Image 1: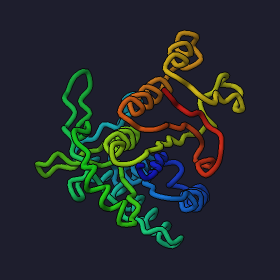
Image 2: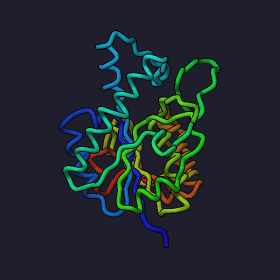
Image 3: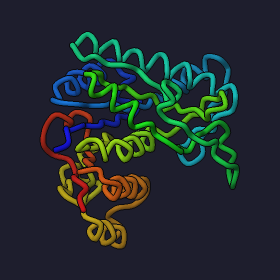
Image 4: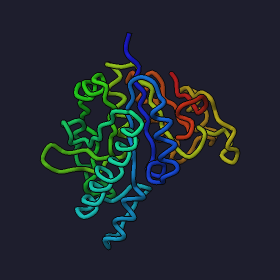
Length: 257
């Protein structure tokens, strides 16, 4: 029987504000068994870039990462944000270790090819080194993963945190009984976007198809759910979409086969 592993993905907004960060650290520390945290940090990167006189350019919510911006996100994601989380977890007795994809060659990516948009130094995940991560996890360590990977040729690459969480969950699924939790600002996937309490408790592939056709699920939630089903298909036991403040309890939307 495989050991349980909980993978939590939180956005930058949660880890960049003192009050929500403290709540997250307490809730994450309370999760029993093996665990892993993936975080964002985009607003901190935007603020530092502005102070340095570097313009932040976004297309469809994705950051264009030129050479200067890559330096900023490497400093912020891999340094400031990541180490604040690691230090906070250590203070709570969690033996956390901060990682980018370059550390131990944990996640290698390829630079996204230029099509309609040139995203610059943005990486699409090619390989997750599950054995190295499993060695850390089974050794009692808790990886805290920044949204940065590398190309194996000496370049860091800015990489979407949702993607890192999903690909890491898929890679570890053969080794652990994996639950993947995506945290965002709502309590779960909503039946009515104007009613925060209209959480859909369970979504199957057929439910998803129906909800998209009915317009219940739209916009950015569609790729989030597509990623969730992709993880389930790859052997992840379950995916939960919920608020960061609810990671230790019940609720949210569970994605199942």
